[in-house]
Amino acid sequence: NAGVTQTPKFQVLKTGQSMTLQCAQDMNHEYMSWYRQDPGMGLRLIHYSVGAGITDQGEVPNGYNVSRSTTEDFPLRLLSAAPSQTSVYFCASSLTRTGGAGGYTFGSGTRLTVV
Amino acid sequence: AQSVTQPDIHITVSEGASLELRCNYSYGATPYLFWYVQSPGQGLQLLLKYFSGDTLVQGIKGFEAEFKRSQSSFNLRKPSVHWSDAAEYFCAVGAGNGNKLVFGAGTILRVKS
Image 1 (cartoon, rainbow over the protein chains, first blue to last red):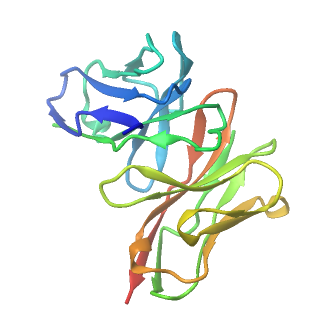
Image 2: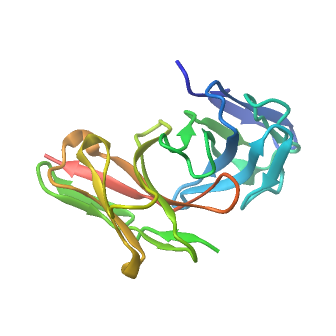
Image 3: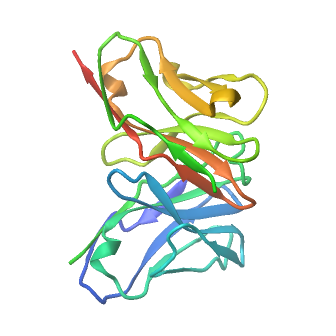
């Protein structure tokens, strides 16, 4: 099925460990982004990309890196995990910056716990 | 900077009753407005969106929303709530030159039978 695929669905890390959250879409969307969801705070933008080779910071970028080498993939890297990064992470993609007819398509999320 | 306020953290309605979820936004230009729904443990699903034109927007699952520029609001409504509507609802404004959505904190809807 077409859509946004996130892996893994669940992950537990120790403080200081690094990991990469994977995000892939097969809809040929130019725009991709990463959000984190915390209780009572809605979703906050971490990083986004407007096309292959182009990325920019969102609202809460510290502690995270991204790259966009292909249109399909937009991985999120945690360089040195901290308990404050315990959250649910969502990847989203869209055809245009305004979302287009289909809006933004979200993945099913990665639930990350840092101990 | 743009922002979205959802004043109600929790709302409880009886099945079959009408529903209105409030959303106020702050944005200097004409906003792109969205409502998303999230069931427990799931991702976000688009309910409806407003870009321009008719200020009353129809969405999926019988939802509608009305854009009121003078009040900076984009309230979500449904005439008769079903138990399956219990979920968390997010209002969002799209802004900037990139892929930026700014979300409200969400409203959790409970439906009692």
